[in-house]
Amino acid sequence: MNKKMYLLFLSCLLVLPFIFSHTNVSAKSEDEFPTLEEASQVLTSEDKEVYASMTDDEKSEKEIFIAEKYDEGSILSEEDTIFLLNQARNVKNNPGIELYNGSSSKAVNKALSKYGTKVTLTGTMYQNIATVVGTSTFRGNLTLTANSGALKKVALARHHSAYGVVGWSGKLPTVGRVYKGSVSMSKSSSLNTTRMDKTTKYSSILPSYTTMYSQATVTTAKGDQYTVTTPSWSRAQ
Image 1 (cartoon, rainbow, N blue to C red):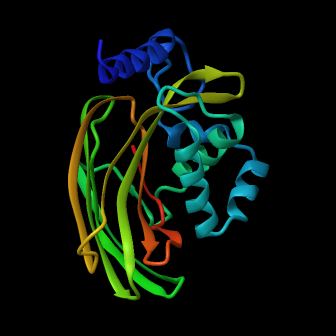
Image 2: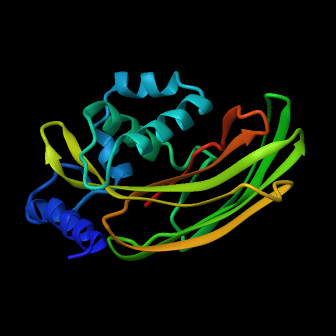
């Protein structure tokens, strides 16, 4: 069994024990899984107040932290579950989060000056996520432009995460990391402009919330290194 099939099998094992369990979310059939937005009804006033006190940058950084923290097949901690439930609850009021509606895209544009150089990362993030079970797609279309200074190496990456409710434990739903993937490339010559356009398909199960962000890791001619990271882009089912 190859790694991809093993991970898909593992995701199925995470889901199967809860297929016939019951949830207590209002306006939802007991035999169905709630989305993260629906499951957010369990949030307390304190949970909502803590979330409301966060800036947009802090929310983006938290999403990226969660994306980097968990492997595929992992169950999120209570703290991280509460944060994602708040994000899903905020879906209709936050312009940085979009509802599923087939395929969608979001442009990125971020410049950074450091160690005597300046670069600009531009491109478009694409994703087409299946509901419940199916084949999902995400695409990395990025361009890094060297505006000033000499570069030695450039690496581009786009990271994609999918989360879903896989059960219920106590007062909170059990939220699992149902997919973790990325597309990337690097090069060490002709660095005035570096481009990447790659697409990945994967088999997804219960992806009720997805996040994406892009990165460029830059090494200067003197050997100094820094990373340009775009804000996280999220979608909820």
